[in-house]
Image 1 (tube, rainbow, N blue to C red):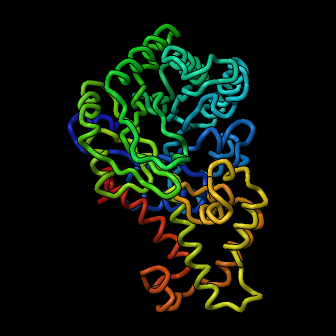
Image 2 (cartoon, one colour; image 1 turned 180 degrees about the vertical axis):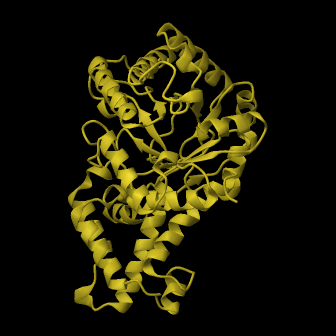
Length: 422
């Protein structure tokens, strides 16, 4: 597995990483496959428990559906599906936090089984959240570890044998553990800084989780725990980005050199290429990115909408910016509790927040139809030089190439940082 190569390279002292694209957006996935083909690397595409689960998640897809979805995109761009690593992110009882522990964990077990049964091989076990009948306050490390081991056991039961699916262990599950998980999709409040995970906390988490695996009869499975999630000191929110500061993570970086695994860094969206390179150098070798990619997609669509306003008669325009906002206002469940402020501030955040809650709405029929109308109106030809210069900063592009340029710019930063770009 390509992920094993990354771990091995890190242990040889090489600054090598892998980009984890956490998105269910078809254009983002399509561009990820194209870029991966250019650089001859195996793409890592992940779905979260909120996006995809046995009940459909917000995408309406089960794990099996998501695999078919990615396979279909791979066929469109002629990318070998077998080279794609599929990951499940934040797999645990997060979706069912309002239920008693036993009920939530049973649902989480079924979700894990469906992920593994569908062909996902990188599994992030996340049991860090308090459930309805848990005592008040943060969960103990012991409870988190026991629940993680329980889910790992459910995953292993889906494998055809204890030795994995192929010679040399190819296709066997790889696990990511960790309790200090940044909030998915970015922070909801402005932060001046976040605390870097303490070495003693990582050490305790590893020791306790290893013990839980062994007690559950999962000694061989523990050998396939390849990464641990920690807080590297990076974060983003509506209008702020906390950049990576290497000296603050120096002790954390040195510690993982003594372990047979690497770090997984969440919330790396909007970090500079240099910051991403420094993260990989310091063994935060799995770089998760999601909102930054759909933010780039949204930027491209808005730029095209501005050009459409100059080129197309008023009654023939897609009006996609307004359509998108109307749908968000009509269906506020994906942004209302995240965007604070008065009506004007919320209206601004719906369009431009770095948290990019817009990403939940591209699947809405009205939005999808407006986007199709926009692309049809602008056609396949090269757009006017003056408009491209004004709204994109690059010229000689078609509408589709404008979108590709924006998304590719984000992916290129990650590939370069991971040592994957040639």
